[in-house]
Image 1: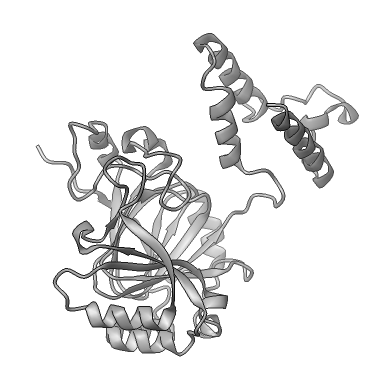
Image 2 (image 1 turned 135 degrees about the vertical axis):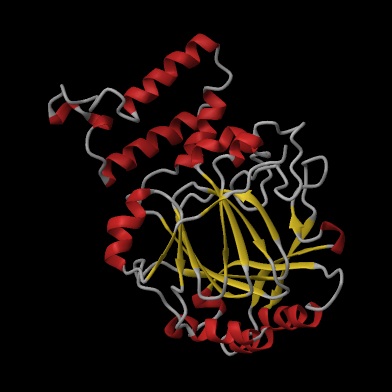
Length: 339
């Protein structure tokens, strides 16, 4: 019996900031925002032809290099690990954006081109002036837009430590998403190295190996998917897993990452790394106790753990202020230096 097809991701049209904040984000579910960028000049160019899309982007590009990744034709666009999981099947480098775009057009009819991508390039520096003509009103003005450009690329299932809106400007992209709680059924690769910061799933969506990854069948019961055309966008809540397939020879997407958590706090991801070091090797009975302690103090499983204390005595359990964060960081730095 084959795996089930992913359910369609919910779709909405005509979204504005008020509805986005009141309805879409609190639901913590991915949503397709059809036609969000239909009036963008970049999208009109992208719908016209790859040549028009590239000509539009070249209006704003300059000679400064951007980071790019390149893979041989043999990887068939799937940026991934080497078989031993100790390296990657692609190389990173720098190139001016203009020659990169020219190469995309030159290779668009090739039978087996090199896999090419510029990923997460900050638009204000990479394409100055682009945002003046192409913007959305769903996020704060200080959220920096980034651009992703490439050919037929397959990005492995991964998650972001941010909320995310991605808007296609040319080409088509298929998103396949999984809720955060499917982490155990997605079979994460190494924490170090990772292709782009956070661990990725080792399961090849196009050809899943259920003997090696049997739990992935359960993950597919929770999967959702959608195909985005130029002008369409997707909202991805915090930590939702997503795989992205770029389906055309010239693709470009603009995305917006943001995190509403208070500025200045420590990184939860770094806290996870410290927990892996300090807790994972403990005896089972001790891990069970620490799980209870973390639930109580960090996640408030029993309510406010300091409710019975007067304000002056709450210390690290009190309101998080810049002064408190500074003291806690100093304590951690001192503790780590003794290890």
